[in-house]
Length: 174
Image 1 (tube, one colour):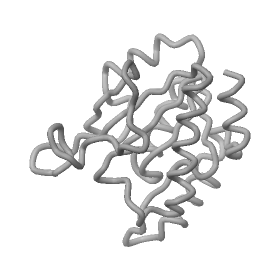
Image 2 (spheres, one colour):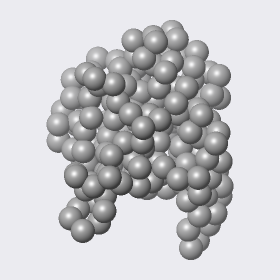
Image 3 (cartoon, one colour):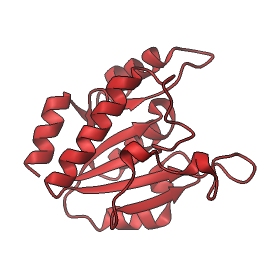
Image 4 (cartoon, rainbow, N blue to C red):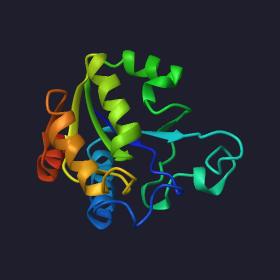
């Protein structure tokens, strides 16, 4: 199994996210559980391009200190919503024998959604722990509605939705 941490960047990690306190607490705890149990943790950052404030060299581009990678953990940069848009990430994932991928991070209705669908199409068993992805309110729906829509409807046939406790147990058992 791999724990994939998506777009946990300073420019996105904000208390305006849906259920922020639960989200950040569970994200930190899953990363800690993965590390304690020798489950690989991979980070992906979104580069929105020059002048965006979210590109290499910008403070907002950096991974939030609460979840920052440890030395030796892989970090990939993407320029489109799906993590599989990064050629090196895609090739690395194709080499994995264990096709279980636990995906956490931001944002539910953008990069998490695209990555879930891309992983599923590539034959990965996608695991989504409860309360470990989030998003902001937008012009069409609240962050809560978006979270529930994707987690409880859109991904229903694509992922194994698990409770937070089940996710920790999965990481403890490798």
